[in-house]
Image (cartoon, rainbow, N blue to C red; front, side, top):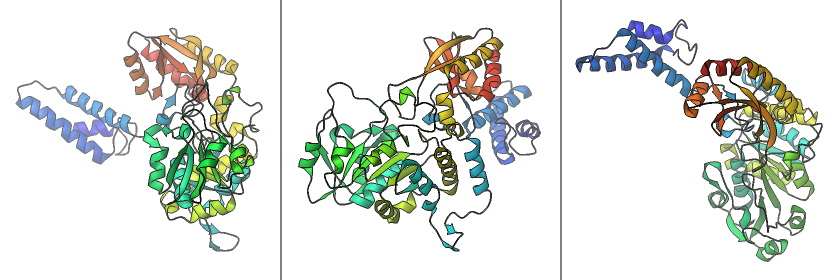
Length: 443
């Protein structure tokens, strides 16, 4: 028992040193389990060596370590990778989180007056400025933002939605289900592929609380399609609420030297509001490039009504998310796209990626430089790709090769029998680590 425990604890003094070295309490549980299993095998007539027992302990510890939350290298080419934590945060945002979380803060306190304040006054006010809204507030994700808006403004009343926008996104989030849970009554108009202003107008009644537009962020409809623009709906009377989903603040992307062509028809929060939308809702950790959050921005009176609803407390954002979003909002207000990793990765020229790929390939004899296609991910920009570059390695067993990379904390993809590591989503500081892992598994 003592030797197994020593193996699991390593030289860390009971503190986790690596995923394979466990804290004391967990190490004791694993050691007992390993020894009990070994004893049972001996009693069954098997021959069990000490090294076999220690090896079993190491494997179990490694399995536990791999199941714990930890950083990985994303070599998939999916920038906003939902399974890998979506958008990474930059140094400034991380520093802001550390400063606020390491002590006390004025989260709900006004320093100028010495009175109670609101957590919506910090990041919310900056995000409102960044997208041209009168006011904004932050909740814990965009699904919560949509639910809260419906509950606060339309409970017991009708909400008009085009049939072509009754979408389902990841995790089974369906617009009709959310509307039912909010207490609003869904009124479907138009057809799957075509909905006109007249369809909304005919459906209006004294019970109409709002018109809801939902951006189809995770699929594209082409061909014989038509939808009523926000401008045409804004004059009908009820407030128009637009769920843009991915969180592009401004279609003109002034924080970048040049607007990326792959953004194509992605709606911007600023443009929706300028077109007459009363409110827009969007995610914080997709094209906004911040932490997991949902943002509600638009008319000050409506934002205030939403903030007063009892459900707002249940879905509010915590101080760490608000600190990170405040930093991200500063970057947008300064037009500093380089401060937001998502935009820095998305805007990196292919020539720069190819230069890095050549350096990685030079350290891995079996690797070759290949042109690839990255994607935005996170349910954003479906069907659109971003020109990229990476390294490719021919493998006989794709699952084994990907598993070996995952053991090194690197996630890649396989295409046509070759393992692809797309460098658009790999931080340059991780190139050496990637090359070393590839060299090890290709020996």
